[in-house]
Length: 172
Image (cartoon, rainbow, N blue to C red):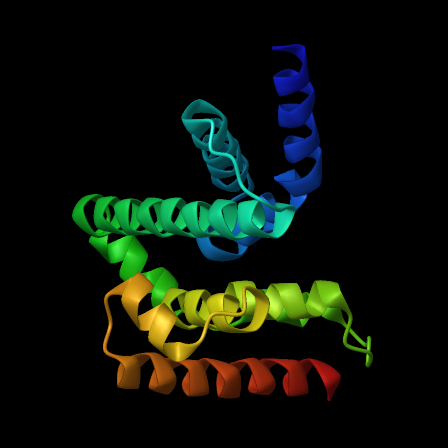
């Protein structure tokens, strides 16, 4: 049992940050991301799955984390559209005002990129995250999000274009 506890601690230490940031890029909320990260690891520990390598374990954990994150995102969106449709619609139409606070900084830092990605519409942000950061291809993303592959490509291209616009506005 002691070896099992040590293995759980090792897995936690090895993957907790990666799972947190994967979830955060999808849900956009630190509290939810931390909760999803813990839920993912607890699910793994509860099922007592044994993998041949850390890479296989990582793939399984990331897949579960992404699925839980998307489920949380969808649930929150349903609640927001059901409970506060005017406020949600207004926030979707907002421009990227928080990028104006950056000031005269001409260099593009990771913080600027993070803010630009967070300001994207949810659909663009999720698809860009899954493609650029998590390494999924269009076909895998279309299965995960239950969207047509052409829709995923289109949203990826539009999101990428919008991100470039945001970053060029900051740079200029």
